[in-house]
Amino acid sequence: MEAGAPPVYPERSKRKATLSDVARAANVSLSTASKALRNQERISPETRERVRKAAKDLSYTPNSFAQSLVSGRSHTIGIITQDLQGRFCTPALIGAERILGEEKTSIMLVNAHGRPDLERTHIRALLSHNIEGIIAINPETNPRPPLDFELNIPTVYAYAPSLNPDDCSITCDNVDAGRLVARHLVEDAHRTRIAFIGGVESFVASTDRLEGAQAELAEHGLSIVSPIRFGTWTEAWGREATLDLLDSGISFDAVICQNDQIARGCIHVLMQRGLRVPQDVAVTGHDDWDIICVDAPVPITSVSNEVEVIGAKAAMMLVDAINGEPHHGTTYVPCKLYPRASTIG
Image (tube, rainbow, N blue to C red):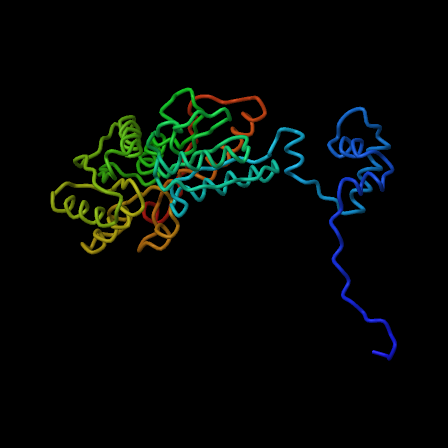
């Protein structure tokens, strides 16, 4: 630096433009600038365009909190889940976020961990933020009690429908899922002696999928050849139940397993006993969990509950309700079969 030269300081960051700056640049009142940016009537097209140009030139960003005070709209909804790390809640969240993002609606996400007391605490907190609606996501399709709170905002129950038939709920069609699997085994894999390994009997999904499979088989003049047995959702149960099937002497050429873990356990035992999958025995799963289906000894034919679609449709229904067009009752989203080598190899 030369002697006597003034010191050079770093340039201070520019102050964020305010609505007053926009009004001043457009040579209009503060009220007119606000109305022009909110596209209200009684503002001439020329004035509106002048205000918008000023806002663009100044990189003006409206204060969302101030806007909500004026409009009464927060453009924010709450999502209550019970298991953020679960297999089913995350895809539903992804689907909902995609739709709400398109609607320029923010999400406040809370996890109740299956605790009704924590759920009530979270609801109070969400309501204090002036949310416009709630999506309640549960990790299983068993119907759930309605939210234990007096709510004056729209609510949609996703994956687990509300026990109140007047509430807006959306879930997968497990009866149709059972039909899909049975139809695939009969019509595509050409099987006629079909055995069954169930999940947890207390789950509505278990009984609904069984009902659908039995109905479809009956339409083809067939029935399940093995005893109807339920257990757990684990690979260990799949192995145990398959060993029992093999030791029973029952002749079967296919096994309907009610989830992918059970199916993988079943395939392991069949192969250990020297049976070929699917040449000797075809095997199906459910949930279409890639980490299990694709990495199994034989890739597993499975059914997707289309949970991301459920989340997206739940968001659409909530947006409709917020806009004055509420839905009532339970909507069932069709499941989708993904054939793999365990049935059509």
